[in-house]
Image (cartoon, rainbow, N blue to C red; front, side, top):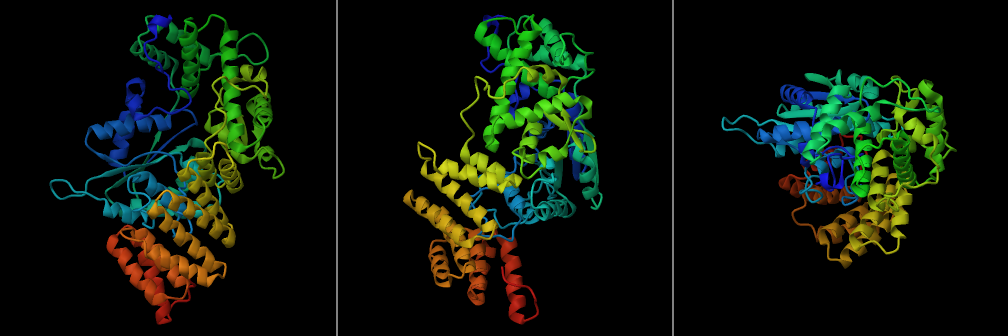
Length: 562
């Protein structure tokens, strides 16, 4: 393939990331799987799409099923990864499940955080329902991608994760218009089944498997042809052969695999495409050693990325990955990544798993190399090498939010602190969010004075740029922590200042009502909560809190205050 034949800068390969809706032109070879998934998703209230990591579940959803449903005029809620958002501090409505709040932020990005927080999943669906010409509820299609995040033992705390799934499955039971799709790795399927089987809801399972060699060759040939290649058929044969053959320690290849992993195909295809774009050489070089060298460079970049995200030396993921490769089909047991004194945390291992470098065996007792093709390149890799396109480090805010969502609170705090110390200094909004995130972490561990200080600092930063709505939220979060730390006067002053700023933000009103109740002002709290329920956005938490206050006032409830 010559330089003249390369007509698209990014080429037909997406690399390590999943396909998105805008990539559907190059999302090939999955038409029957797309039809099966759309059919199941449309017919059943709950559908579980499962397969090994890297087989293409997220791509099938985002580039296959979702665009198909959208083309038919169906209502499909936005998709993405769950992320805790410090834009709505956790201390405002701590009774709401943080994963529920993250899901509603994902489903309604234009509404969050001024509307949506404080609302249950069922209430959200009720307030966003629509009807067809006959007055019947229109189906709403929703996705929870990468459900294994909520099933991993290392993501804490377990009751919070279980309560979220319970709330989600309750919504599926009660909202007949909701059609929910869960994607999960097969290794976690049995655990998910046990949760689903407790529910009275019809559900189906769809399994996604790797490509057969012939399908993979056809996919690559068609993608290359779309990109303008004049040698698409030849290059496709060579590329697929490369993904199926592996050299471990010796020069002779082992027997070819009888399947082709989509993740490896995209990873290697993107690397070869970029190499051909720069050099004008053939897409697949004649020398197998050149392919291995290219994969070695890519592995160096991935390991550096994982090390940066988890603030460890590249030697940590590198040494463990070498051990996994050396163990062959036996794999490496879990205890190596569960030693509290080791830098090899479960988070590092999960990061390598998420990047399709390792996979767990069926019972989850050991990890194996995901692709035998990677064994040779890994053997020649230096732990301190960095790929040429490796960024200097992750975005501090996104890295902190991701770690917080995974339950890695110490890592989240360190990313936030480092982000605040960066040079150049982060912009005011990012700085305020990093500071508020530190407030959330302090609140969750019960350090209320530290939380109040962080929230107050973030409020000053927001005030400086004129973001009044964000200031109000931070004042409420600070007030709750002042009260919980015994600083009653400061807490009441803060909530009064916030109350004077609130307009059409029902979730914030619900939070103010809770803080007033905490301060012993039940009647005032009820007045504020009634206003929150008129707005609707915070109705669930407002309704729950109002009921508890009334029960306390009647003397019939033994419950404590929030």
